[in-house]
Length: 533
Picture 1 (cartoon, helix red, strand yellow):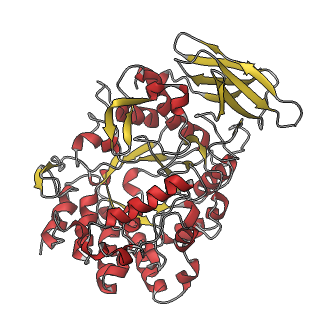
Picture 2 (cartoon, rainbow, N blue to C red; picture 1 turned 45 degrees about the horizontal axis):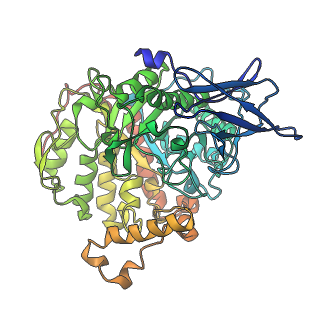
Picture 3 (cartoon, one colour; picture 1 turned 30 degrees about the vertical axis):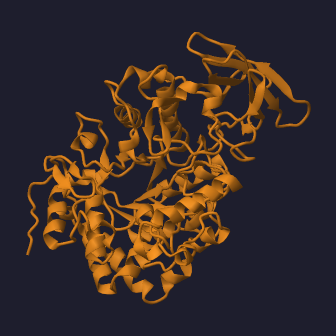
């Protein structure tokens, strides 16, 4: 484990024996003041922080307790929320709240996460998984998952975001669970309840960018971002430039927060190919170190098909989402979004089942360049397969699900192949019963940003011939519309109706067989083969 992981200096408001310690990194700022509103009411108070040689401003409020609300005033400007806040009850622009993570009484002391090769992942979006859209309501659906054969719940990002509706990839308060889903203790209770039912919990986190609204990091330091390096979202996070050490510590502290304070068993890292770092020790390797030290695992979303991402002597990720299989299945079932690079043939699927990836240095027509590296030396459990996920469904114009684009027989065959394949399988919420509800792209931004998002969504699809007619383009659901969000909520009544109940039974039986037969969960690539018949 690296020395940087060992010696983290977390920011935020921490309860200590002498009150509440406030710490914020702001190396270019001369003065940082904390304005505190006591939880018990009464007069507000303020505390001037003292800066050390590394640019951290720190001080202790001797009267501080959990529940106090606070904001920072930076060089007489503000007030601003804490970028390491544990809770934002008034939204991402409002006051932060002091949270005592030790106040929750955990019941999972005997819990032990299953090994990766035994996991079956199930991806959910908290806001649309249940009618209520809360952490607490999700607990009520855990018996369904356990009965289905799921033993790993993967939650889309919950770091707080602007508004009350979002996929989660516009998060800006990275340490604070989204207040529209519940309190931090509500999230702890969900993880605790899952563990009680034998279900591990994985959290999706985003370390390649922050959302455009409510990101206050720049208020405290310009060094959080590197203007000389860019990603699709703008200036890259500064993982390797001047003053990068504190930036890396901020994100490594976030890893520690989710694993230590919320007992998550693993993390899913969004778009790791966009985490740009030229350091001798890549941030991904340090994230893996931080997770492994805590007995957790890390799964990367990475489009490059590089073995180095998951190799022990590389970045050390425990697994990667291997989307070649998903794209081949989609083309085979009639969705031609990826037919430039995939045919959906039996030979192609056989190649992916055996190697994990189809592209292992082969020329990609889509990229116009070779893609991927050899992978046959890596065990199958390191490749996570799916036939649907939030991207594959939500990035269709109307959020249609895969089963709605093909025949029932073809969908059943694809589902069985996924569930019985040697790779680590993942389901997207509702696919096990063929949910008729879509999963559409939704946001709740301010008017100006919301207008840009709506226009951008329609321009994105204008490159497809069927959407070039402005009249048809206007039928694409508006991400800002509340109906787009509510339309995406699962209809759980379908689980007891035909034909959904029959498809659900297929998934349940396949997962029962997978759990029962160790041969379906091989630990290596020896002792089995894939035949293209």
